[in-house]
Structures are given as structure tokens and as C-alpha cells.
Length: 229
Image 1 (spheres, rainbow, N blue to C red):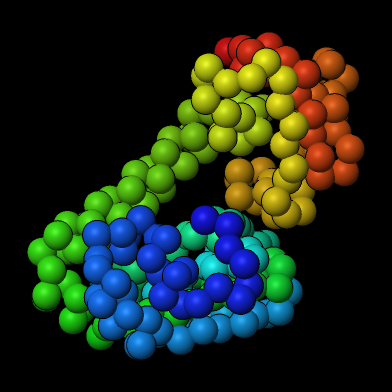
Image 2 (image 1 turned 90 degrees about the vertical axis):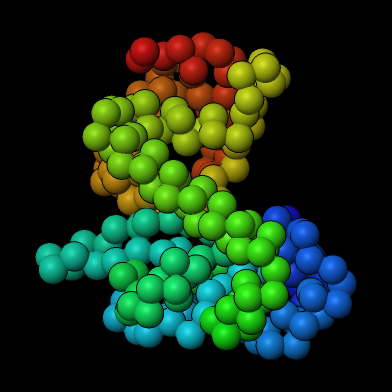
């Protein structure tokens, strides 16, 4: 859901799958309780240990979720872009955030308060089911991550990341623009930046990719997909 920075709150909410079953009147009711937040690149939206009062929707820009280990190493949990939400589960659990949220670019967000959500959940059983489905998708996403870290090599993780938006039947070649720095993506894939760069170099030397800054061209998608299987 790429969005134009000036788009109204009602319009932004109506494009989110979670709210797609709601009427314009219901959307307007949620919008009245929703607060807009503008974060500059590098701004911290919340720290690990802060108490949530609702959840967030990224309208424009990019947010990084992560935590810092006792050794001072940062681990990126997720990178979120326009149309994606975060913080729903923690909001319902009444527990502190287990991660921090930081803007990777100038970002516009919407903050939907917990009470607004509870009111809608009481009014509409269908909305309750959609919220459960949304949280289930997020859980499945986390389980897939754990499986990838446990069973796939670093090379397989990077190839999977490069091809993540490319269906099996898609074009023969592909160009991918990395959404953020290679260090941040490496952390998201549970790799060091050095390991990430080394694998990109290896794939480049093998003629499987062409790297130009954040722009990566894949001349033969199927050849890269079948590499290291």
C-alpha cells in the first residue's frame, strides 16, 4: 500500500486489509481516535520496555524493529514499509514492548489506540476474526523466520530474500532494490554484515547477480533459485 504523504487518515485506514470489511462510517469512527505521527530518519518511536497504548500503521516511509544484546550488538527483527502494522499482539497482552522501533527514513505513521480497537471488536464479530487472522499471519511469519535461521544456510537465506516477491512463474530476469542498508538487511537475516557482503560477492563472481549499490540485477531467476540446493 504505497501512500502519498498527504493522504487522509480515513483513506489510509480503508486500504489496510485488516479494516477492509468496515463501512465508511466505521472507518471514520476509528479515524477520529487515530493520531498521526511524523518521525524523521533515525528517530526512535518507542524503546524496549515502554508500555504500548495501541498499535501502529506505516503510512509512508520505513520502520525497523529490533533490540540490542548485552554485548551491544543490534539484532533487527523486522523491517516494515507502507501498509504494514506492528504492535497489535503486545497491545492486547498489556506487556512492555520487547523491541525498539526506529525510523529508517522520514516516516508517517498512524497510532490506533487500544480502546478504539476494543470498541470495534465488541461491535463487529467479523472484525474480531480478521484481527485473529492478522495476528496468526504474524505468528506464521515468525515461525518461518525461526525455521530459516535454523535450517537454511546464509546463502539460502539471501537468495530467498532476493526472490521473496518473485513467484515461481514470474519473469526470467529480475532487478531488486534493497529497501535499506546492507547491514540492516544482514541483521534481519541473522547474518553479520561481513558474511552478507561475502555471499553477495560470491554470487556476483558466479555470474548469478550484478550488484550496483543497493540495486541488484538477477539475469536468470531460475538459475539463482536452484543454486546451492
